[in-house]
Length: 140
Image (cartoon, rainbow, N blue to C red; front, side):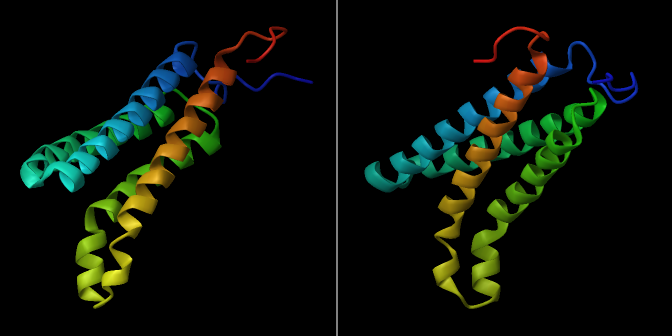
């Protein structure tokens, strides 16, 4: 099988950087769910931290998406990274959308969307890990 042209191959530092960013994103999302749980079970004093940390996750997602394009990761990684930014936009606006549509039953989609974001981050980390493996080495 012929190798991909240099213009389409990830940069040498690409897969480790993509793996790091995806792992940070998955970890940040897990912490965010923990903060939401603190808010639900221990009281609203944790709400502010949940919101501020959510803003930080948004920045991380933008950096991750930009990096996926700049380091020339495969198309599926680039588009999923960009999709995560779109899902985060939805995440940020689910309550407003539910209010606009007068559909309060949509609000729990906030938690479902968080699961989707986490799943995509873990998937991107796996792809980046495999992309960084040297040919001929077994994959984990």
